[in-house]
Image (tube, rainbow, N blue to C red; front, top):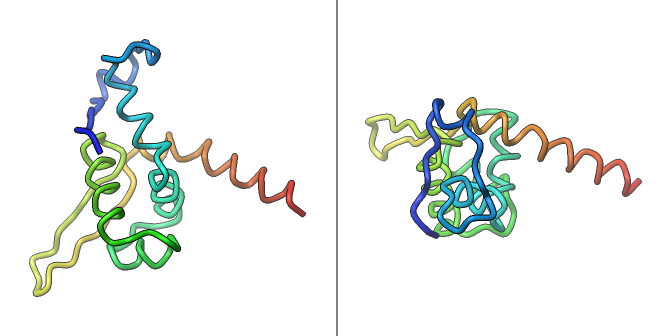
Length: 118
């Protein structure tokens, strides 16, 4: 994955040209719509989770891919990370306000797809 392009609160109201290759919002969009980014955001919409809980909630993801995806989403400002100084360290992840805002339409899309399947 490429370096994250964290969008600060001041930047979040700014218009971006996502069709331009140098646009910082393009990196964030790439991480959100990556193979695993969507699943991480959906999983964290319900509750803050520890690393192993996230791994168990997303079937098929490897520890390596989960770690890479979380690293990018943290850099982008969509996910926060908290480490408890225990042995072994307990790492908890949750959505920032920006992550909640981005995750909401994704969850709605999944709900519509699920209703359409029935």
